[in-house]
Image 1 (cartoon, rainbow, N blue to C red):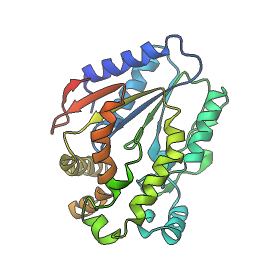
Image 2: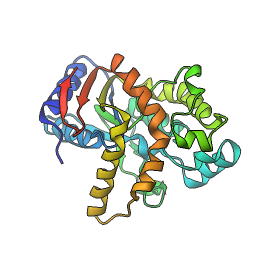
Image 3: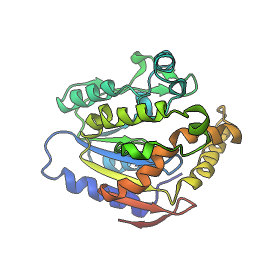
Length: 265
């Protein structure tokens, strides 16, 4: 699958404009809901930048996930839903900050990698080593998100929250993480691109398609019931981002239900 050529050209133009006169590492954030095409865009942009002589690399926020053991500790100490990776609070933010600091200092550093099949980080010895980067493409579903206003947390947004987080402990803890450590991480981003879904209701269909694509590659997949539950972990923040991020992002691609780009703002 290739990224939309007009979108790719627009994002590349944004990066190249910002690189002019920019000293040190340039960090581009790319975010959007599950299945919106973030990884496809990031790979296409990486190839294009390298072809133009820009030393670049991609880091996914998924590669910063905490280990199973660390998430089980959070599940025991804070809330059982934190055993499932995905939401703010289930990433190693300090690791991400350390990687960015090393790249800013011009040092060689190993980029984290996470194995979703085993649900644990890849052995550090197998992380790729990079140095001398001019641009880092930092992609992930919640990149650039802000915390919600406290009043927005009162009512559950779906069955998962209503039945498994009735007191709101999980969603408030996640929001606190987003307000604190994650803002330090996202604060290092120099420009933000957001792939805006037409609404959260389409995300389930996009995720189903993702799983079909994975199945075609011979990997284990979730069934539709599993997908329906899994995406509920992401619903609250995804809906908030669709509302909030277009007011702040440097480039917004408005997508239709078929993931085609309707317009670029």
